[in-house]
Image 1 (tube, rainbow, N blue to C red):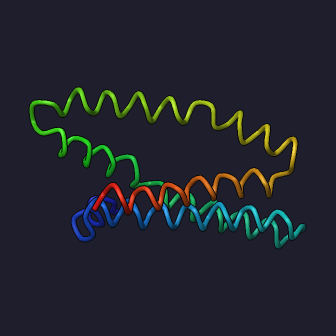
Image 2: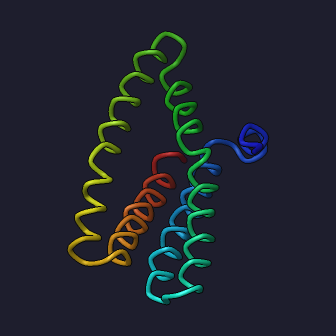
Length: 130
């Protein structure tokens, strides 16, 4: 995987936004694939989760690079520590939330909700990373 080469070519902002778009599409594919059933559901889920993996691979390293750069040399350590705590705290309840959604409403709704949250992330990344 050539994440550093992509960062150098696209820049952090474009890489983060593009990656989130790919991950959003991946979760949407997974949500819709579950409605198909059988072999098509398996293939759709496989392709969707591959897109999720590709789409999420560079987000955190690129986001942390943005945080460190904006904080400057004197504040990078503290800023990265705060970013790490916040991102970890946000990720911690997600398996339970997605599981509860899936148990209550089905996998399509659960993965569709993740896609919707990532779409919000796309909008925020466009606004914040300008």
